View 1 (cartoon, one colour):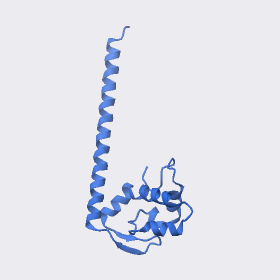
View 2: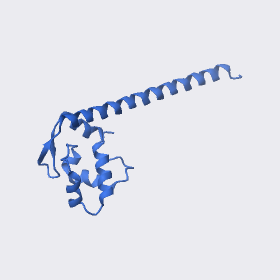
View 3: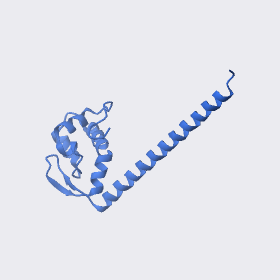
View 4: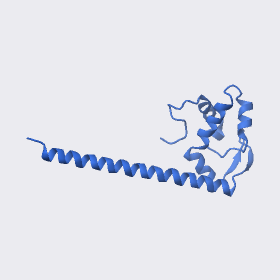
Length: 131
């Protein structure tokens, strides 16, 4: 499932609202530095903790990090240009993605090895099972 929308079990209702109402969120465009202030003004009812949780979730998605790597222009909530992604920010996004993909590959390898071990055990059990 691509991360264009939050997972159904995600508890932050604000992120669902942001994806529905604000195109820069839905399209995973790089956000302006200090966007939390604009979010607090536009959506005061959720509170600071929910805004922080929504931003943490959104800016941690693979799609958002890939947009940072591409070095696109940062945008405000209305889609207006609000700065550039710096080389340092791009490098941090690359490092985060590399680590994420490395961990995923390690997890898949461990799952494959566990499955293969289980299959071998089942074969041995069948081979030596009393008939």
